[in-house]
Length: 415
Image (cartoon, rainbow, N blue to C red; front, side, top):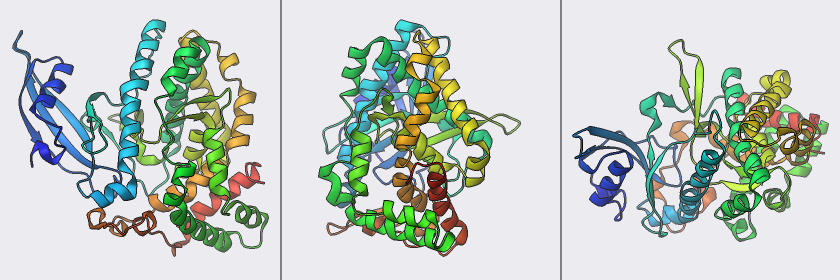
């Protein structure tokens, strides 16, 4: 394997750039590590790479462990997953949003700055040779939960706390430096729900409708839940999702956009208790309501039993965490994020979690051997051919989908 397998633009010069960012002056060698398993990345090919270097001024040696995401070599795969659009957005997130956040936090000197994301060491974007080289946090003990399973209460609490801090940066930034915040957000683009992407998503959405309707019909037949869910699962849902991601409010922030389990990497203590989280994969980052992320996470990662017993606790955890960093940055948390306003926003926008859940839940519950071979994609392949989901035979999997709708109906998010 060589550097050109990553990208024609990933060169020896890139390696030296990476080493310099790590405090060295020149790279001395590199080696590739294990590749990621099938199903963990659709939009890109992913490499593990270790770069070794030296600081010639003091003789100190160093090694930088990277996850490098690059455009798939299969051009048809690029087209099916619109890789160029997603690469551009994530690179812009790391090139513009993160630096703006870091400058803002430096000006405000919080006791605990938000840093729960990998360091970006290098990137390139031209729509053909794109790559982004990120710190491999696995070497610090972070790993992804099993995507097929719901996460524990302990993980839910820490994720909501981390999400609160993530959104809190935007809320404080918006209140204290509104013009600079608005300028920062302009670098992000909508990559999923826009009129120009309707034809790309349409066939898959219809498949998702079939899976969701089957799950509800078999789990909650002839109930209010089935009736309301069926009204929701109609062709005009895509219009509603466009509206939800494009409507701006006082609680609009830089959102993550893709809040399912694999994008929250956890680190455990020696006693096997979850103690830290790193957020990854910002291809769907957008300037939109913070409730989009909350509802996505709640319906894609949290079990019904935890929603029924700890839903308000999780929301309070989020609110307290966001309020703390808002205050730490010098803004007024009650003005930026009142509890009553948060609850109203979630009630107004919470159905978004169901709109994303009909995609993320079936995709997360696929077994490894059910994931398509992405390198077999041809020019005639459509998104629905690759994300080929069918009604689940496993009642437990149907239950997870149906319970999402039951919860949303019970709380009045769907009417």
